[in-house]
Image (tube, rainbow over all chains, first blue to last red; front, side, top):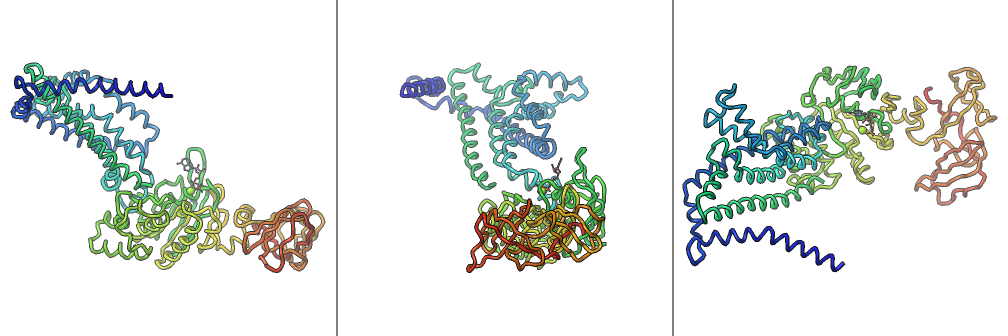
Length: 263
Length: 352
Ligand SMILES: Nc1ncnc2c1ncn2[C@@H]1O[C@H](COP(=O)(O)OP(=O)(O)OP(=O)(O)O)[C@@H](O)[C@H]1O
Ligand SMILES: [Mg+2]
């Protein structure tokens, strides 16, 4: 019993070292821009770089757009599947998992082939069109997380009976989705949204190959050309991801409250 | 035409016929219960009235209008579910207001109606609570208020009390009945609890295998069951098999050799088998319960409070009899031989 416990601790400590050491190293390195002392110079340089502002802003906008599009796509679908097509659930679930299996590079090459300037729908021919394509691509990447989150949220609701109750009170589909379903899966949507945000902010392949000024390619550029700034950027990116994770935790705790509510 | 009229209603799920030849006419303001065992099609009929299922054939008229082609949200029907189905994200007051808000009623009217409804269910003080902060009984009352707020033409309740415990069940069913009478709303109440149906209904529809076996007042259903199923499903009953000796004079041989004069002509021919039914409360311990006197052995004694139920083996049959509890005369013991008696006129012939 005692021995087993010892091994468990050992494994835990090894794991923590494995994860934490590179991070601590990166953090330490990012503070050493000024010779001989620790300083925040690298961060100052990054944060005052206009490209940082432009690319980060672009990616944030993209992330918000992805979240909105994802919600519009996923909530009605997951609802309808639960309500009317329960037999199709495994199929839909499999479909939403595909983005995890198909590499983004395949997706983006598919897009470029399908929508290039000599195709029937030349989306890549204009900035707006390319942005739209990028948005669609991000929505696809976020689909597994968004769908799972919303579907889990719906599971804790008696979707069929609530729908019938609302119908008998005169509500149509839009009203049911907007006033009954959406508010009750909001917490699930939020946790899906934070994941989506974290994914989009760090995404590189789609943005680079579609040649859009996103945060991912900017990080890559900095990484290839500077010494200390990439480390600072990595720490910033980590902080953003962790903030998202923290917010998910916060929101999940909030969800416990709503789950009691449904009893 | 009655206010709610269902004619020749039929429903198939795939190859299974779940509702067959269902006819019912409900007057305005009437309280009708659907009573029947699990799976007999009560919910299915109710859902067809509400519009959640489409009949395979037949018509449903509400207030003179054929509603079969109407969507559920166009029928103006109030629905109360077994699981309450309150919207978890809305407060009690917002739940009650839901239908009115969907209908786009003015704010002042909504507020007034909500207040009126909460007063009706005696929950004025709890308007700001969320459903999870209410007991089951309170939640179901809110669900009732929510359904009534839109002033529906018909109120449908599908086993609204099944999820509650026994005490609340009794008080809430009386409250539902009182509110129904106060508002004069046409109501269909589904239950598989016969006591519930008998105690609060104007009329009862006893359903069996997708058919309405009998439609009648609680008194008729209990005392003049139309079929053997109704006789055995509603209340406890003794079923006695006999041979018809003289159909015109109503003479039957019971338990082999006991001749019983029912005093009214019976359908059938001489030597036909007949099934007679007898309520336990029609049988008396001792010799002065009526003209038919039998001897038997006590098999069990159940003390139910105000009533004591004995089962007595008479010939090959087990016979139930109910007597009132009397502190001065304790019931017989198991194994004792006792005399039982009943009046021949209390024998019921299901379907007569
Ligand atoms: N959607 C459906 N598809 C197939 N069969 C169904 C469906 N809904 C109900 N049934 C069948 O129809 C029959 C009647 O069901 P219904 O729910 O009306 O019974 P019920 O009288 O309400 O029973 P309970 O008292 O258990 O609620 C059952 O045999 C049931 O299996
Ligand atoms: Mg039912």
